[in-house]
Amino acid sequence: MTDDDVLLAKLISAASRSIINYLKTAPKTVAWYDSTAGMITGTVPANVDIATAHLVGYMYSNPDSDEGGAFSLGNLPHNVTAILYQERDPALA
Image (cartoon, rainbow, N blue to C red; front, side, top):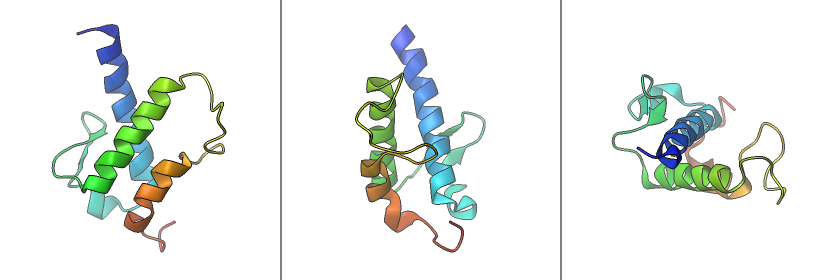
C-alpha cells in the first residue's frame, strides 16, 4: 500500500461522511454507509457514487485550500451538490 493509497482511503471516508451529512437522510443512507470503515459502500445510486468520486478528486487535487472558490465554508463544491440535490430530503435540511 502506497502513501497515496492511505490518503485516498482517508479522503473516501471523509467524502462519504460529508455526503451523508449533506443528504441528511440517515434512514435511507444507512444501507450505503459502512460506519466501521466510515465510507459509502454497497449498492449506491450512481449519482451518489459519482458525487463521492468528484469530492474525493477535488480534495485530492486541492489538499490545502479552495483556490477556485468552488464552495463556502461548511458547504460542498457546487458540482457535488448539483449531482446530489435530487437525493436530499428538504424536510431535514
